[in-house]
Image 1 (cartoon, rainbow, N blue to C red):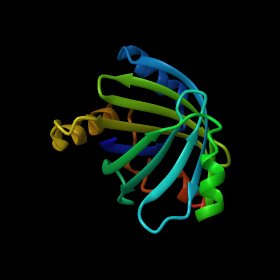
Image 2 (cartoon, helix red, strand yellow):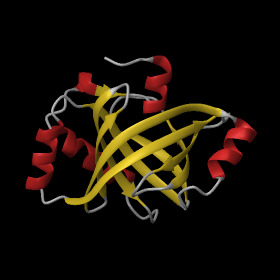
Image 3 (cartoon, rainbow, N blue to C red):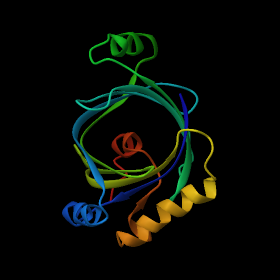
Length: 174
């Protein structure tokens, strides 16, 4: 399934405050997911196998490493836990890095919010404005992300350009 995301990742010093704002906005809480994302060695984009108690998928995506809202082209294939896919990919193309996190997942309409605690890195927020149909104007997706940046009081200096996998590999964290 092809999806277009506009997303933001940012350092978060007060996850509880973000959750309180989301509650005031009547966000729908999906649950807390312990996710292990195994990133594989690929020559184009990023390929990860997500294993969680809520979300399980093989995900390939291309995204620029820039601060602020950025477009991400995503291919997602839902998987079953313990499918053997990890073993096949590990043996065939090799593991690049593993990201272990606890993720609290919220939704407001087409916008998905993650409050993440990443092992070895700390706390973060991700905001994803999602277009699953290809019908939404990308300008609107960017505006949705920016609106919540302002609402959460996120400073430009807290924006993160890269993925958690890159942060772990480079220990490129504040």
